[in-house]
Figure 1 (cartoon, one colour):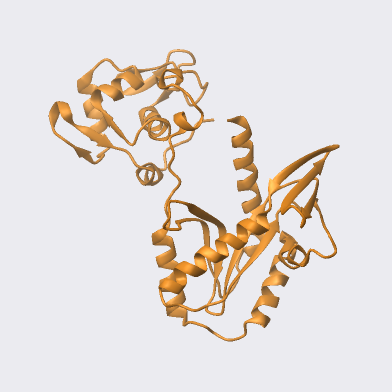
Figure 2: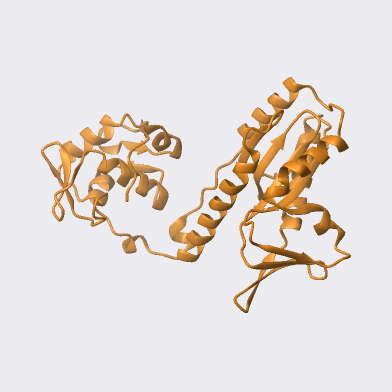
Length: 299
């Protein structure tokens, strides 16, 4: 889990580093983290998609430090760092697949527009190496600092509009609408039992699971911090870890709350959508709901 978390954080930092060079880029619509189904049960994900009426540009962003070598013989990326070597799936293959899948979907919409792709190395200190005959890597791989120059060259390569500005806006909305957020069972993915999850209300100040309901708020019995929104964060955890629906009883068990009336008041007070009535009522949880709340995060 810690290894996966480190990879995700590195990915986020990489995208943020590239954002700096895409800031205030005129004439482009920018879409990030697009995940589409290819219609056969598999998915492809695009880190960044730049869209203009002349062409589309897929950016596959990699935040890998040390020295990286694009191996054309075995189609892999090799990282050398502190006398250790590590192999990765070739991001050129990933980006090319994204190009192929996106082109297929756009063609089905009767839209004809060139789609280019680049592999962007976000860490400026990373040393990039490849064979002198690996033309694809030499053409498609670059540091983020060179991105604006490469985009200008693509604008020279495609000087004519292929679709109207209105059509490219419609296409961007259609691509966004087709996005399918990643949703997988975390417990199953990491082969964990639900009994291994620590339940209760976690204190945002000291991180202990020691908050109790006291006079209309949650109070930590360890550090005495109070927080009225603590149950909202806990419900968000429940969504991410266990399920997108929760009953009054499940809520009480997960928060260690004894009163069904207080549980009902808290759940209905959040105005969550629900199905069923009275004892059979199940409240629906969604990522969009929690994003809209803008509640204070934990330390």
